[in-house]
Every structure is written in structure tokens, then in C-alpha cells.
Image 1 (cartoon, helix red, strand yellow):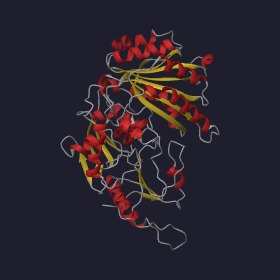
Image 2: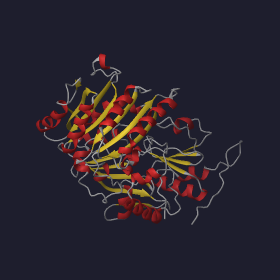
Image 3: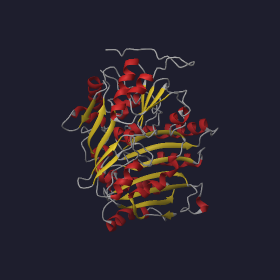
Image 4: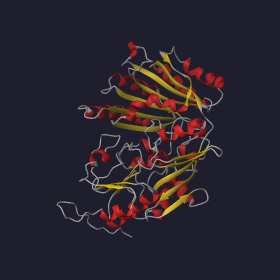
Amino acid sequence: MAIATTPIVPVTQRGAVHPFVELRRRIAGEVITPDDPRYDEARAVQIVNFNRRPGAIVRAASTADVAEAVRFARRHGQPLAVRSGGHSIPGFSMVDGGVTIDLSAMKRVEIDAVRRVARVQAGATSGDVMGPAHEHGLAITTGDTSSVGLGGLVTGGGIGFMARRYGLTIDNLLSAQVVTADGEVRTASPLEHPDLFWAIRGGGGNFGIVTEFELQLAPVATVLGGAIILPATREVFRGYLDYMPQAPEGLTTLVNLWPAPPAPFIPEEYHGKTVFMVLTIWTGDMEEGQRAIAPLRALAEPIADTVAEIPYPAMYEYTAELVNRHGVVVRSMFSDAFSDEAIDASIEAIGTATSPLSLLHVRGQGGAIASVPSDATAFAHRSQKYFISVITVWLPDDPQAAAHEAWANDLWARIRPEGNGVYVNFLQNEEPERIHEAYPAATLQRLREVKTKYDPDNMFRFNQNIQPL
């Protein structure tokens, strides 16, 4: 069944019929249109690569508002986008000419400390969740930056801090409230709409708009966390790759091979020079954690070492730069092997990077991530050893944006043959076949079946789109 289309009449003069009067009357939130002085601020997102102009931004105040906006967009045949934290790398947080449902006002976080459960609205950010959870000595695998929205993070999978100990964010999802394409509100859980529950754990926003999550928290207040700055040599890189698959699962690491930033904990003589920075997050017994981290420190004499017992939310201090609006190019893959040639190419490329915020980002996988069967969720890439991304970031209005993108694409072309799959949350708007890299054939077929059931007309298509059958 095709979606009926009713033309939206723009406001051109006093007395003209405003197309969104009906919607404004029906919702408790706000409808912001181009004639509103708040419009430009409302349509600004984290990634400056895109400058999209929706016909209306619906700043929802509740799940009922979201359902009303979905029904409105369906009646009028309007393209529909969803914004949570606004970190969408392909720019899917805003859509030209259509309706953007903005969840950023839906930030309620409720912590049940006895059951270790959080009920979180989808507009809450990772930082919004971690503050209240930390007050009770609890935590969950979250995005790497405090401003990452839970809506996109969870539906894509949720690789982040603590993932090797406590799994992906979706591995801790107990249930979700979902507005589907017919404007109905459904609960997705192991017992209610289990097919939908399976699909939203990794399948992105293809099946509906998740407005609330119920998440299992872990008893974590303090972690052994910080940065170990090492020389950028092939031997250090190889040593890291060899160690992480066998490292205790309590140890999660994020590596940046990049020009050393002018951080106060890095000696000034290394600023701008290529370094191998390992962010470490250990959860568990602290003495055991020191033993787990020791092999990383032994790779070479550290240039700097800030690892200490810290509150879990303090890890966000190391990624605070990405809270600001920025341009970005990301090219990513999973990998089971990374050759010496790829290591050398990466080190060489960082030395010629056009932006000081250019890096090769590497994460050792395994641990609790790999303990979940590959068909248990729509996130199927559980067994690969590494997650690797070429990333370059620049400030708004940087005239060298095209050069930064060319640099990233050049390094990507040199290392891509060693990839095996991709994480959908780190996938830009690339060639269509990359969707098949994100979802193996059996997973994609199952996702298409769920899509056909809940969104047969592909209303939710402004995303890494999965076509209905």
C-alpha cells in the first residue's frame, strides 16, 4: 500500500494556511517551521557536513507526540527523519523539506537502584544517563562522547566503554517503547513483539522510533581508566593487536593513532607528533586491573600515563573535544587481521594528515561482545577481533574540508582490503553494498522480513535503509 501524498502548502503571506496548525493543536511539544526565529538553531546538528532544511521540526515532549507526528507525516506523505543526539555521521538527523522528529527534549532518566534498571527516554545522552546512574554506583556501556544520544547508540548496537566486560548497550536492553509506521505504540521485549525486539537491537531506525529504553545497569562506580601514550611504531601497534584478543574481558581499550593533541598530560615536545594513545577502561578488582594493563605499558616506555582509579563518567574528559560541532569523515570496518603493511601505511598517513584531528581508531573486540551468539540480535559481527576506523575531524568553516576528506579516503583505500564487516553506527552515506557488509545475508533477510511486517511502505527510510521485501 502506497503512502498517500497531500501537498504541504508553504507559508508565503499573512493569512495563508499554515500546514502545521493541525499538528500544533494535537501535541504538547513544539512545531518549529522556517518562519520561526528558533529554526536555524533547532536544525543545527553535531556534524556540520550537512545543512538540511526540514519543512518542520517537531520537538516532541512525549511518546504520544511522536506517534502523532508519525501519523501526520504518513497522512501528508512527508519524508521523515529522527534526531536523538544529532551525532548521525551520515547526517540522518535532519531531512530536507520533510518532518524531523526531534527527541532532544525527551531526556527523562529514572534509576531503580534495587533492580539496577534504568528507564531512559531516547533523547537522553550518554552523559545524561551516566550522571544519575553513577550516583547509585551503577553504569552501562555508553557512547564514547557524553553528547551521544541513546536513541541512535542503542538501535545501532552500542560499542563503547565497558563493552568487553558488560557487552554492547543492546546486550543490556530489557525492553523498548517503539512507535511504528502506523503510528501505534508497541512494547518490544523478549515476550512482546520479540521479532521487533530482535530487529531494533542493531537494525537502526528502520522499524520505528524508539522513545524509551529499559536498560540493565552494572555495579560499576570506579574504573581503572585513563590514557597510556606510547611511541607510534610498528612494534607497539603489533603488540597491541596481539595482546587484546587474549586480554582479560574486564579490559576495554580504545586506541587513537594520531598527532598528539596539546593536552596538559602530554609532554610539550610531543605535541603534534604521531603517537599511539591507548584509552583503557578496566572494571573489576583494581589489582587485577593493574596486571591486565601491564602488558600495554610494557610495549614501550610510555610517553605519558594517566591511568588511575577514577569515576566512570570521568572517561568523557578524554573525548570532550567531540562535544563541539565539527565536520567529520569516517571510514570503518571490522577486521580479524591487520598486516604490517597496513600498520606502516597508517603510521605514514598520520604523519601527512591535513587536519590535526586525524586518526586511525582501533578497538580490541572479544570478551562479552563475542559471548553473545551472532544471531541473537541484529548486530551480528560478534567474532571479529578488531574494529578499525579512519577518522578525520575539522572545525566548522574549515576551508580545507575537501583535503581532509581526500586524506581519509586515501588511507581507507590502502587498508580496506583487510576489513570484514562494518558497524552500522560508524557507516557514512556510502555505496549501497556496505549495508550488506553491516548485515550478513541471513541477518539482512530476517531484517527485511521484520521491516515488511512493521513498515511495508518504507516510511522509515532516511537511515541506513533496509528495504522491505
